[in-house]
Length: 101
Image (cartoon, rainbow, N blue to C red; front, side, top):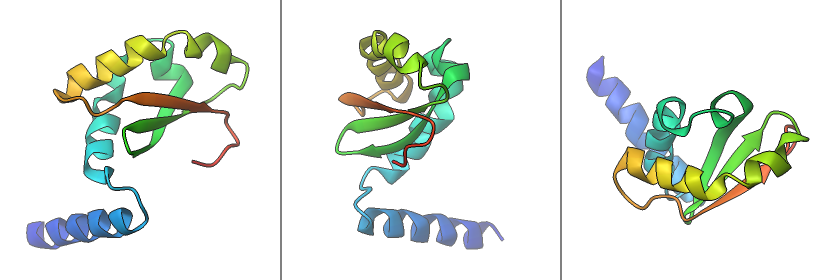
């Protein structure tokens, strides 16, 4: 069973890379670290949706909060890079609740 799950994970990573999401494994690491690394209001008001080419796309749950959260992007980048112990995120793109990544 464990081998089957590893094969699925490897296949998913390969598939995501073909879609241009070359940072898929790193994204999953960032997403797992998100709750403990980002603090409020990021934790309850936004979620990471994609990482590509160093740009992290973050979906904000309330469109009105985008402006407020935009002031904390520099701190967010630092916290996430610290959490994954590498310079994974170079920039952040905030999108509203109905936007697709």
